[in-house]
Length: 110
Image (cartoon, rainbow, N blue to C red):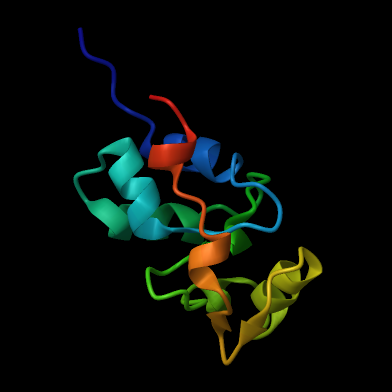
């Protein structure tokens, strides 16, 4: 008997491991988890993450843009959460994205 994967739960588990002051991307999480629907599935999970104690503000798009900011209840909340952790954001884009990027594939062992 095969058990169904809890894709959203797996995404949330990875996002909870993103260190304070670092960011990751939808695609990086999808690659790490080998998700067939890829970054889109991670985006769906992040949109549904309210109430799951997930630091969703640490997940951004591959260009360093706060593409999910509309799901935080206000246009600047995601930016404020990141800035509270020491991440600089200018024009909805993380400054020094490559420096603060956290890649689960290299940071976590499968």
